[in-house]
Image (cartoon, rainbow, N blue to C red; front, side, top):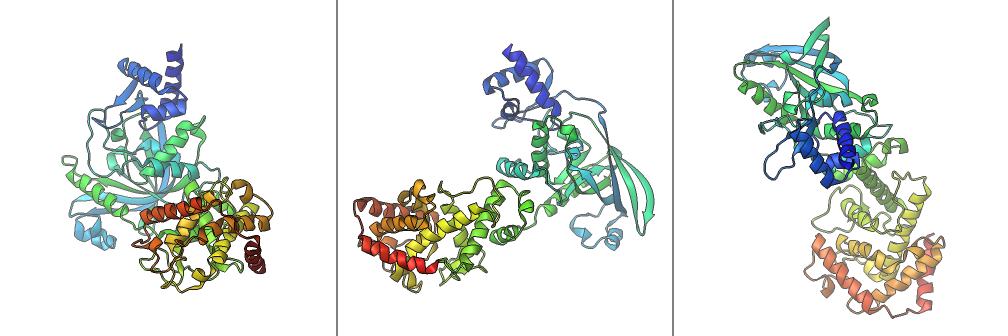
Length: 498
């Protein structure tokens, strides 16, 4: 009975999929035991009820539903232009066309249109080189990046999701039907009609995805997990090339496809912190469409901005907001990249409110995060006041190395119950008390000649080593109880900032 139930679940999952799925992916969707599923999958494959795609040694095998003939048509209104002839003629039509077009005799229709991206998975192979019999690696398909796909799924499954970035697709002229509607200046408007079967190998689908494979994997997973995948809709732009090459020799076509893929996938990313700052300026509703990873980056960027401008912030005007990366040489200011790194480390502490992202600046959780960070680093600034005031060339306490080590230390010296205490003064006093246990030790100083910082730079291994050393000092001095008078003196300095 268990096998029959598992078989029904597996068939239900595969019936909704337009790409091959691994046994583990099927199990996750069908909520089935992996060992039972693998047995049932093998039995169903032996009976010819499903089709396995053998990927070779060391590669995960994929499974597909049996082929369904003539499932339907997809129609796309497009505007484009026919290009034909040899290279000299093409150069009159396209600037820089020599970057993607070779000296060939052919016809090529380049056009743009709008499509429901959930339909795109039906007509274009995500991994075009995967066939029933072999793997024909032609070098134009990205491998599936699991983590990347998971992040995309998080954003695309939102009810507010939008698709603005285009997918780039190629069709052979004889694989589709094109009906011209009318001329438009030196271009024309028409309708593409693409026929598709329900479950065929990627290599047998009419279209090639040359840019957008990871988005298609994400949408495929969203659809397969949906109760009604046919009702899903995400309209977005698509760039299409329809080629008519010599059918006797496909070398020229493959060369065109490879070159187009190589060029469209060579775009450089924006500097990471520049992108994060940009996302931090978005409205709350816009931030909801971001992936979970980007939402956290946005929170970090917003916190860094507030720390740089806050009057009561220990980092007021100390952050170099123009420096996007981690500096090779520490200047008087702390780089934006270093602060992002430090805040990310701090947010690993359980007491921070960072769930249910995004967190707009008006949210009380954002205020809590800012207060806790300010209190913690104000305490460090007050306890190590002489070191903090020195130029960087004399003291490294404001370097990424030291600040990140203190950020990693927060869970050791601050209990969650204290962190969550609404009484900030009481919380601040406890932080001071704990930090004094470190500052009173003769081994703790941040001068250029400090033995604690000897030979240390700013890489992750050095941060880990320094954190361990400071933790040892704190642990060894755990019985030390600082004078209340000294604590109150520092608290009074802190209160002046508020």
